[in-house]
Length: 329
Ligand SMILES: Nc1ncnc2c1ncn2[C@@H]1O[C@H](COP(=O)(O)OP(=O)(O)O)[C@@H](O)[C@H]1O
Ligand SMILES: [Mg+2]
Image (tube, rainbow, N blue to C red; front, top):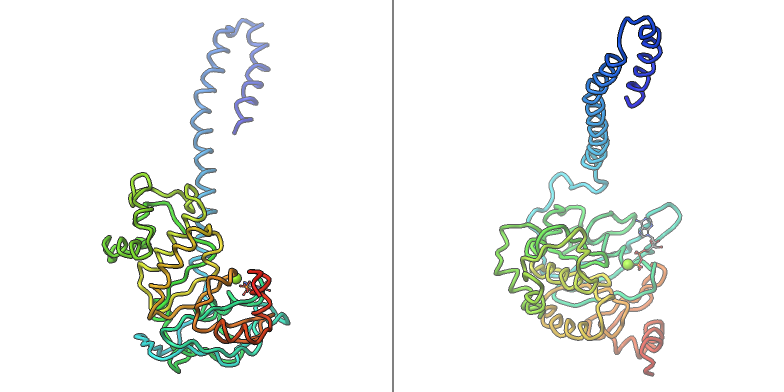
């Protein structure tokens, strides 16, 4: 399109030379012709630019539909349990799992999580802690063994029913452009503002959020880029509590909060965890000392489990980790 007018002008100049010499036309006519060519071509160039935009949009739409059309690997069974009641315990029985062939991530893992208890999972990076959470949330199904809630296999529970019981606070926090209030209730208008505010008060960060410019109406940018990492984590805590879940899962959620804020969160959390079933993964062992049960993993295998005191007495992996971290013997 850009080349067209250049070629046409070249042709006009080429032919007009003889005509001007022969006094058939004047230079003014040639000049006028060139101007008209420009005028005629301009809209065509604009149209071609619009077509380019359109093509890009189609390309993007293709990708969006690709995602929308993706069939989830995990599907609800034909007649799933829709109103799951959780009264007893979650049980992993001989669970084995691998993401890729011949790279087992969890090996014959058996653990139980009683309702109302706080269970901590400890282990080196890559030992399979997050994988346990992914299996419990049924993002994947175990290759062997079973996971049950009150003796009902996860595969027989409707996924939406299962997930409505759980809140996940993860390492990566998902925030979207919008104000803080909508971010906390994830745009669910059926959750009242009062409920959100109550959750932040319980969490002890109400005044802190109020102190932001515009408070709860403060607009967040994509991914919460206008907040510090610690602030984003505080928001994700409050979000989890806004949903008042029966099962609270925290995956290294306190790893980037400064020690002072962490101490404060620790205080409000112990109040919150009371009576709630919670699974906590934390690198800093000081944050999980009071858990009812600590599960120690190594390369996807259960090495030991018990309370902090029991594990310290065993003088095994956990005790070693604790000594390394705290320097207390
Ligand atoms: N989506 C995935 N695809 C393939 N391998 C994965 C995936 N997620 C985790 N892994 C692998 O599984 C192992 C356990 O990971 P993970 O459960 O995230 O460990 P942790 O949370 O204890 O650090 C690691 O070796 C990791 O590389
Ligand atoms: Mg992890």
